Figure 1: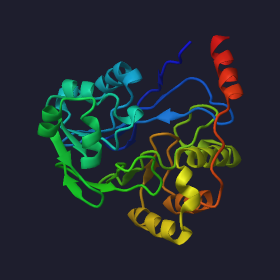
Figure 2 (figure 1 turned 120 degrees about the horizontal axis):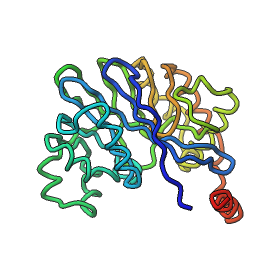
Figure 3 (figure 1 turned 45 degrees about the horizontal axis):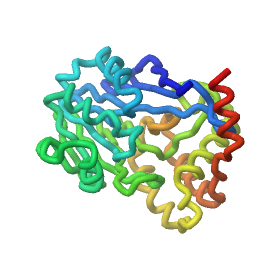
Length: 272
């Protein structure tokens, strides 16, 4: 049986900043459960952060509608074009007719294969790393996460709530769903954190440590109230510790790929 997504109850992380958690209800071999966490900033000009995957678009819209009328959404921030982040973009643009799509040119270009280019171009708003956008009651800053799996990846810092969205960076598959990283045994969380980073960013072994330290420094300077990865439990601040973890990962070898035997074992679990 093909796994379906599960929605957890959305919650308010900081005033007007909501997390909408989804996950696949099984653990990957040797890893754990992976999260998929779009955000809603319900401010003067409401902002969605990522659109989820096509396999849970209906569930995403149902969850979103408990927090806001989609017709009131003004901006959709798309971190990059990977299917689990951008699969719902066409549906969200339809259900959010006032919204403009915040993206980069690289991300925009890759969406042309899946959507009508003139439609996307009319609604696009390009925001590059380091650039800011005033959305009425707060300023959003686009950032380049130090760890990424697409050249178009951009995270987001909300200067009002001080919530930092780091896209895929700082995620971790974990044994079960908990909103916050500090709910897990440190060894369990570190194992998932390191495995995810080694798997998702295999180029990390080629990185100069001092260069990576410099890339992490601007995020440390933000002093975020919370660090939200799309793919793991939320960190309550602690950007210095996350920067140190990033350097540690860059000293590790890439993760081995899933074997055919492990895939078959996973399918056996799903059939049971």
